[in-house]
Amino acid sequence: MTEGGMLKKITEAMKDLVTEANFDCTGTGISLQAMDSSHVSLVGLLLRADGFDHFRCDRNISLGINLGSMGKVLKCCNNDDIVTLKAEDNADAMTFMFGAGHRSILSRLLRLAPLPPRARSPPVRSPPPCARAQRTSRRTASRTSS
Image (cartoon, rainbow, N blue to C red; front, side, top):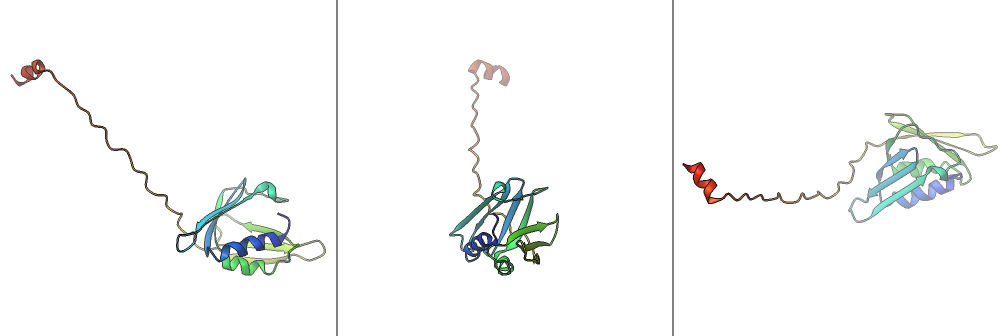
């Protein structure tokens, strides 16, 4: 992803459905899966590492991001800008940097939202316990009762 315009479009498409979401960053890319507030729509996003000119994620990290706030930060970005996202471990903010060629780099800080709880999957029902029956012969039963 070389152009900021693409990130702006992705954010615009999601922010009306989902207000806050966990962006899971790993060495293979950035992913998101979130439900809207009425639990009708599921939003899924996968930005693979090979889709970026340069991608680096030293440790797996989840970033709670308010998509409305992210949209406001991205309004500072031109469509042809290169966007750099940076977040430290256990940070309460991430940095967005925008710039292209002759244009100087513009930096904006976005406060991270508390991580929303993960969507809970339906409980897995365990199979009923197996019934065991052991048959004893009458002869054995009469010996034990004597």
